Image 1 (cartoon, rainbow, N blue to C red):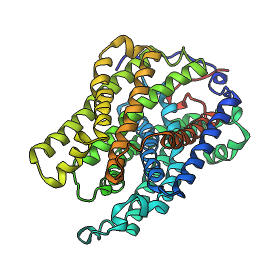
Image 2: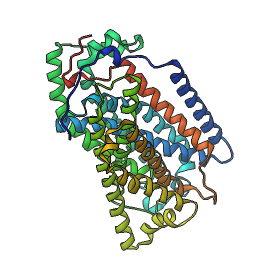
Image 3: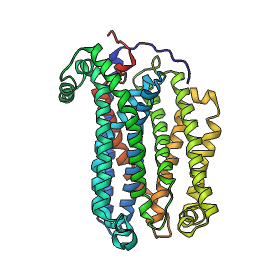
Image 4: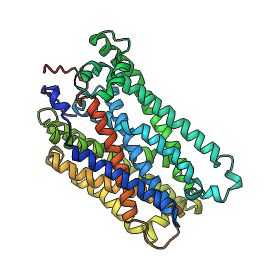
Length: 416
């Protein structure tokens, strides 16, 4: 990664409140999305609402966890280039508590979305049964979420005193919790660095294991006859890819909204662009490796999943769009150094990747359960997606309002 030079900025620039219309607009998105889902889930065709719900749960939950994994990777590698955007990545994890509640809500749609609930498979019933699936997935999410909260506690603790001076009143209980047993800033910084060095690799490993389980249970089980041992790895690598794209977009937005041009420079965007390029190749490699094994093995229980998406309408055109946008197109565009250094250019690429990867998650879920001839992609899916996006952004903005975007562990001092 590139050599990094940082410029101090006043803390007031990092806590500037957003215009009220943004918060109001996001709140309306959530209400409209929730209303659309509830109307659909209680209507004559609840499957369409529940499959859109599952697609968005997987997509936005993956982004939230990927942000914290990015921070843990920064910690493990001792990288300094990402410090100005690290707090933005950590803020993405503010969605995780909401994500867990959204997972629990899937229980009410179990008979609609999971075919093995309606038609049990005797040979797989020991693994594919409702109590065991929801229990093991809830435990995995709680373990991953608990470790994520612990990671956030130690990365936020050195900032508690500075954040309390300018933070909102509703966040004061958080500041009190973070400052309990305060031993001085120098001691707390040292303690946080030592603890995060231990937690980071554990979080990364648990992320891989937890997301693999979620991929098997919430995606692969939708087509109980299909199996792929590489699918879990492909799934969590894809989450990191879309998480980096979201981080690039958020970093560009924060740079503009909070006037952080002196802090988030072209160097950060160039390095983010290089990471996006690397994960574009890595996720494409996992896809190709999985496809190649299935193709040459030519086993009916494996090829069916691929053939439906690659050759049958209405899914085949979407598969080509995903391939062109997320892999071939992104690969060619991200070869340009100038584009990677330009916030607007990288934001445009990141937006395309986000849209393409949402379609990829759509392709993983919907063809396995939808039996209609028409493509179930229209206004209901758009509004439900908007509701999830609104929830994600509201959680992120609340985190950013409570804690400045510049973490103390970077070693910066803000005099004003």
